[in-house]
Length: 89
Image (cartoon, rainbow, N blue to C red; front, side, top):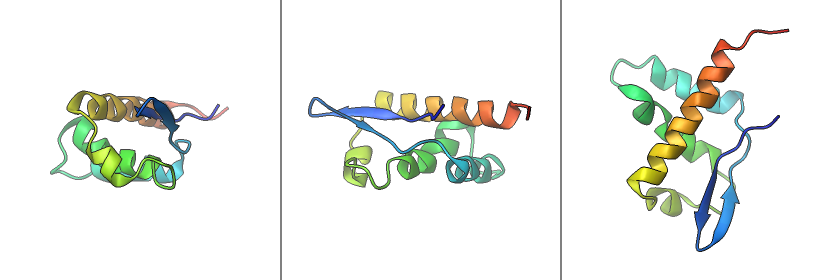
């Protein structure tokens, strides 16, 4: 199952690329940074990464409301936590 994020802009839904190893590494690097406090600051750059190459330009991502951006970060944090706590079969 591929996990993605989505946003709605001008009544059009834009889906991110799938959560992958690179997104996980971006979050992990922030997680290990003593300056990063909490999932919102740890996932900010990964949200940008997830939408690279989609119709959601950086300008669109930057214009999201605090609530929308928070929701994306928390969803991405849950993906990260699931990935690092899952056991290999």
